Image 1 (tube, one colour):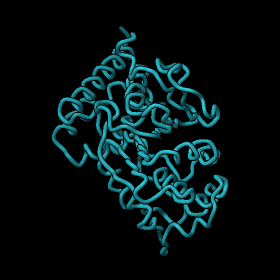
Image 2: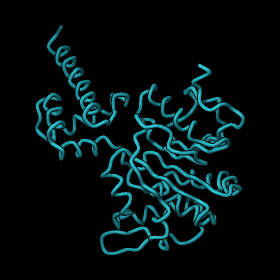
Image 3: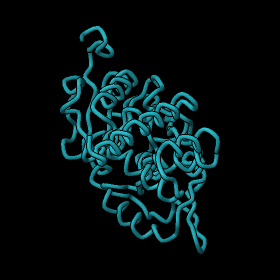
Image 4: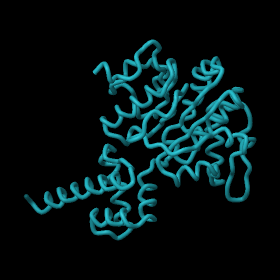
Length: 289
């Protein structure tokens, strides 16, 4: 074996041990995340900390809580913005919300909510479509407590407001975006009536079970970081968590097409990656495979 091949093999084993240690010690399971994504994020942290190898990183994870939290933040998927991909929200407003409004009570789940921009986008949309008050409960989950704290605060830099406003308008906003936040010189804060509709809590898609029976689930730009096995596992979780006729919203580079659940959903918007769970099917696939 050449020196390069041996180094790469040793590195692969070190990463595998690191991920196993992270799971055994803390319950955070990244073992089925896409390898390239993990390697890129961990390599960045290794270099930033001046570590020689991933074995040293494992030692810091086990004994240094501050480093652990930093690595978890690195591994979190935190690229988000309000009304991101505005055509998706326009489609939800037109094709999904009218169905949701026929229910006496609506449960909405944002899985992998990150810092909350998507959650508050939907709070605004529901408010404008008169789905509010005691008729709806919005759940937002992420595995990272630091990210959840930021989402609860609902504070965003002032420089993003112009982009968020443009997205809101393209998404078919019915009012002025400025009505939904309070601004100071450096930041904006989403107004309390919108924040109060959301229940934030910790949930790990890789390890945790069914959250509740939902009418709509958002999990946008998360599955692309999982391998095929974990994607199918999470898709079963979503299928089992949706009521018959419930909606599933994925990211633009994600699809049900190559999962075990492709034939369990109808397509509501192909471009928008919006699907609806078929009625009259048995829950899950465990008895069919």
